[in-house]
Each structure stands twice: as structure tokens, then as C-alpha cells.
Image (cartoon, rainbow, N blue to C red; front, side, top):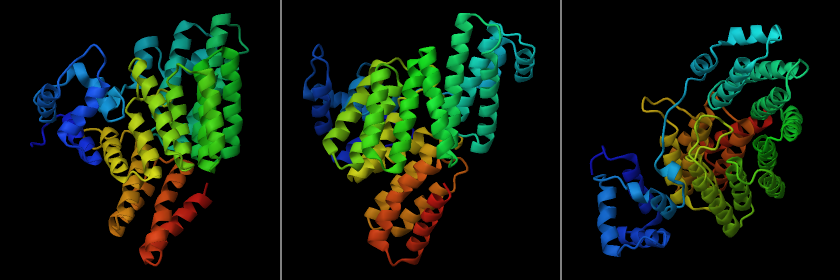
Length: 410
């Protein structure tokens, strides 16, 4: 088939191949996913399936069922792309640029335009989390957090006060994440607790949920898998219908996978997928604290790598890299891509291909934007496979030593 087929058509073939399914096998699974009011024979659906895989016609009515057939979300299988220019949006919505915002804050001129500009500035910083150098983002995030906190003591009405508290909570979440990425776990935990208190004060369930998600993430990278499950349960209880709950289910799935419980892993992934399917597609998928439906493939990739489903993990890693790269080759989500490359390295190592495994591993460690604890945890999987299968190979030993240095630098 030609390479100009839509990405979803190519993915249908790749997903099917990863499972060893024929087209009729896939059709039978999809029939079980159809809602009760839709009746279609195997042969009719098979004819449609062949046209979909050929890219001849878009499956407009059946996108959700196709995604469910392969265990992912509609938004992941049929993504909507586009990055917003946050700095331009600030001016368009509020009429203010950064210098004017700061000038107003210093003159205690807090009006709706200023608050709009602050809100969009916070969103812009959260969007830049994926690719801005950590040291730069940390400085900027702390500076804006300090400015917002300072406004709480000025004359503002009740609604404005609540919004300022909520904004401080969101900025605290961002700063805490970057602190943890940068190897500052104590600062990160203190900032996380501050974010939780601010979220409680403002009544912002999403902020509270993300504070619990950070606790789950910290526990995961420390190897405290029961702690991950407990933190996720606390967050889901607070924000059961927010998109953060999908990420909390994903953290549970990662923990269960590391505990070796395949059934609970699948249960958690299923709950996360079902929640994302119920929620409307996000307005801004670049925001770190908005769960992009395409990120669900990233969650599944990690879980399947841990439970040894190599072909599925490999296919998902390839999809994560493709979905996280712009058409011009720019990496939109370098941290996701790094973990996907580690996954490809693990699969290659398990297949006995040392050179490919090392190539993927080294490339993953070379990124300029990294979450050190997460990358060290995932790369540790590759190190374990290399030690068990290629323990006497000089290149493998050097890579494992590189991993030890990475962990030591946290």
C-alpha cells in the first residue's frame, strides 16, 4: 500500500499486526464493541474494514468502536493537532503584553483584564512545560507565582480573590513538577502540599486532583507502588470527573504492572480510557495539566512494557513518537519521546539486538528536556535487561554505568 494513507489507516494495520490478528479477527472484536442499536454482519463490516485500512474512506461513524477495539481512546487514534501561541493569545484576549501585566501588578491595578492576562500566562507556562529548559521554566514559574501570591493581600473582591488562589495553586503545581524533574524532591513535595492547600481553599477540584497525582508520580519513581495506588485513589475521590482522574488511573496501572498484577493493570487502563471517552475533547491539549487523549497510548506503552507485552509496547512506542513529532520533525513532547525510545530499546534487548537497544537508549538519554526521576526509572528497565542478557558486553556495561550516574545526579 502507498505511504499516503491517513495515519489512522496505517495504525489499524499496525495495531492488528501487533496482536497477530487477521482482518476477520479484528472485525469480530469490533462487533463486540458496537452499541446495541447498531447491527452489522461480519461480511459487511469486513468489507468496510478493508476500505478503512486502504484509506479509501474515513470511518466517521465508527471511530470510537475502532479505538475501543484496540484498547485506546478515540482522541488517540484520530488525533486533533495544533499548538497555540500563548504569548500572542495573552495580547489578543486581554490587550496586555507581559510588561504591561507586571506594570499593572506593581500599581495594584487588578481588574478583569489583568486577571485574564494572568490566567493565560499561567496556561502558557503550563504549555511550555513539555519543551522549555527546566531551569528557565523554574525561574519564570516561581516569578509569576510570587506575583500572584502578592496580589492576595490587595483590595480585590471575593471572586477575584478565589481566582487568584486558584491561579496560585496551578502555578504551584507547575513549579513543583519542574522542581521534581530537576532533582529537587524536597522542594517539590513542599510545593505540592502548598498546591493542595490552595486547591482546597479555592474549591478547585482539578488542582487538588493534580496535587494527588504528583504524590502518585513521586511514589512511582521511588518504587513505592502501594503508595501510588493510595495517592491515586485519594485523587480520584476528590476529582472523579476531571481529566486528571484519567492520569490517576494511569498511575495505578503503572503501579499494578510493576507489582505483576496484569488483571488490575487492565482494569485501571480500562477505567481511564472510559473516562476520557466521556469527556469532551480538550480545548488546549498542550497544557500539561490537561490530559491529552493521545497520551493514553503513552500510559499503555509503559504498562505493556512492564508486563512483557513486547509487540504491543513496541507498536505503542512507535505511535507515541509519531504523535509527539510535528510534520517538520520538531519534537512536541521530548520527554514522552525519550521514554518511548527506551521502550523500543527494551524490546530490542529482549529480542537479542544489543546494538539497536543501545542506540535507542543513548538517544533517549541525550534529550535537553528531561524528567530525571521518570527517565531514570524507565531507563532502569533497559539497564536490567542489558545486565541479564549482555552482562559481559563492554558497551552494555558502559550504558549501565551511565544510568547509575543519571540516578546519582538526581
